Image 1 (cartoon, rainbow, N blue to C red):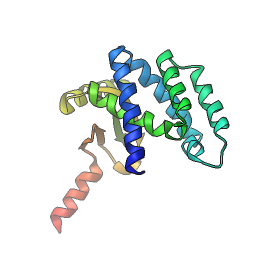
Image 2 (image 1 turned 120 degrees about the horizontal axis):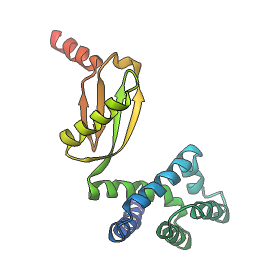
Image 3 (image 1 turned 60 degrees about the vertical axis):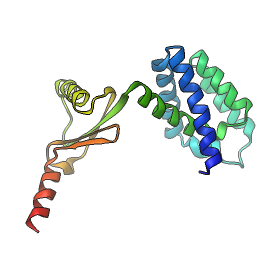
Length: 178
């Protein structure tokens, strides 16, 4: 991505973030954007929106479908994206919006990788631990199972990581023995 496009994405993202914070609708905007991004990623719409061989009228029809189930402010924002012919940048703009909102509100997704699924009590305790250790507010807990960990867990949020996995401990021991 060139600098001009990056600045353009930043500008649109910052505008939506400012509105979300000013109107106190951060949670609503986040929820709406998550739902749109989920649809876009599951259906490979990032490439679709960026494809120059696809008529812009088809892309606009698709974006208008998003407007039917979103908040008024996001509908207006989508209309601006359509009007300014920026549909190709829709997904990167929304990803940047979520990034900015996370930093502004100090609320981040927490990813935990474990060998086995966590119980509800473990999830609760984990979120409290993350809030204390990482000094942030957890938004969502994203759980991933990786049997190669053998035991323990790997937690990451806001570019910080706690790795207590047995795999990591074995790797550390192996390095010390060399």
